[in-house]
Image: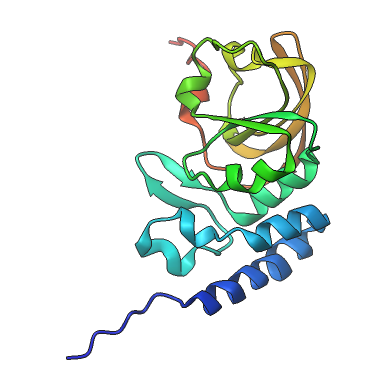
Length: 202
């Protein structure tokens, strides 16, 4: 019996990455050169379990287990393009569990702090305020403990939930509040840690 490794070769992954850019990003208006460069350079297959590597570039989210997700390529492409990060900025990323968006963002900013949703609910011990917040997931609300980590007027890019519909929103921090405007309706993995408290009803 001959055992055959059915995982795609490095060449196949490169082709899948190019197809992702051409058929998912560019056709949806994600054409910023820095986004194309980063998403063409970072191996998405390295951020999923071995058994999921063969479909790492599909146009949907991939479950990673334990409530963690790798969002669809278009979600991350749209977030990066709207963020338009600068190399003199201090960025804060709430990671959805894959580490992929952090790898995309890190060389585009001056500094990057990566925290989990659970850490975002805790009071920060650092005095450094972030100029840019990126939340890798859909939130019903952004906790005050997270917004307190931002400089006044800091830019925010996040997934949001309105009713039962997820999407992407952008805006700015104002004190311990966020003023957000939705710019895309798209499937974004939910961050249950950021669910709003359920109101009691009869």
